[in-house]
Length: 590
Figure 1 (spheres, rainbow, N blue to C red):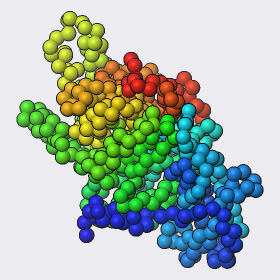
Figure 2 (figure 1 turned 90 degrees about the vertical axis):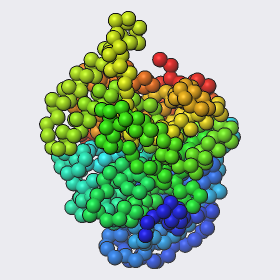
Figure 3 (figure 1 turned 120 degrees about the vertical axis):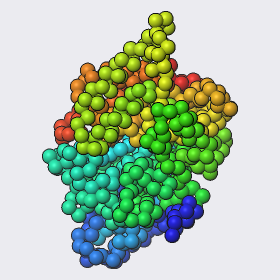
Figure 4 (figure 1 turned 135 degrees about the horizontal axis):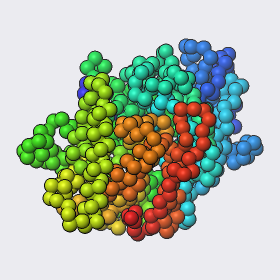
């Protein structure tokens, strides 16, 4: 049966990782259910989805033998690390039906308060986790960490380890690609064996079934640096495509092929595993995963789903004859089609309604893909398309890459002359740099109508808009500027976007074969010059982003690690970058 949007919402309401509710102290005693089974807390503890008076805590109990029907698990929550001042306790049963995962939604907590929590089963104690609730009322400052795209075979999770060391975070936002679905020998796995991060033999094929996805989460959550991050601070998460499969959209995906079964079955399996393993509330039918978090009167955070719920299939340049005027017209008509959706009408209306009602100084969107208009000269994109085609055919793309890098330098020189007002610039040269196309049709650039609707609404409301993104594996910052023909706010600065690099997935440096710091720096400069609304980029480093909000400004700071290919590493202080946006500005100054 085809999975309609309505049936998906009913399925999610029916128990995608529903949490046990805990109201306070119960004084319940231990049960002996499953007491003859040795257990461990191999995958640590986690917390997430904090509210002013509630937060979710998570663990998984691992029985040492197969076939265990169920186990009893206790939890304790206290105001002190020694658990003398208990505020919550309770007991619940876990079983294979939920992969022995337990989520507890702690209610009746105090706002802006730190709590310690732990679990116990069969005389084994879990590690102690630290969580906190969101503040209420007048709030002067909030600090968030932002991360995405963690590929286990690609390298070590040092980025998670660095975030775990920060003692001043209120919350971590994870913007998706928490796991990758590929099998052994798949994307970015060429160093896996040497690094000791190969996929295990019982989970080394592409993920298709519920058991596949569960085992992949178990592998990722065995990583000690990822465990440390979850143990130290609550996460607010949302999925991107690889939690299901590459370039997922509402009814399919680029990486779902003939012979891999029904896509809806695969998607439901993937999302069930996600809700089991992530510290997130099971959502109700009116709000599947997009949801709102209030940090007092300082910040309203909206976590959005741009992947599973409503996204139309991505456009493909190969479907248009871009050498003809008719083909170009057809492409632009498709690009700006008012019926093409990324968020969907219900989610977009939910977002704009809540933004209109919000009294917070900052409106922050936590979502997956770049919203900044990333249009490059068509000449470069066509050349890079040749690179992709050559690589897909298993050929040597070095000569095509050399041509692309030469074009970058050549067109950047012309663009510099145009910006300087050089009268010697010819009409043909101007056309080369001003004939541009979207660099990534999987991002908001491929869904232009809905972007204009959202940015126009934000500008009309006079909101301080900050958009956060992951997905690309590189660090970016850009100005969100409406189109000249936007019916509400033409050509207006509507907000700013900050995009985090990846935890371990390779970025554009891998695609463009940028093999030394000088080439990287030159290419970053060139791309910044060629893309009008782009203000900052890092093309080569793995890392994370922190955002420090005050009532008057927000500071975005990108930090990067020296390597993910060795256990020994350091933070790259010379590559870190901080940008400040003042309240009321809605732009990054040049």
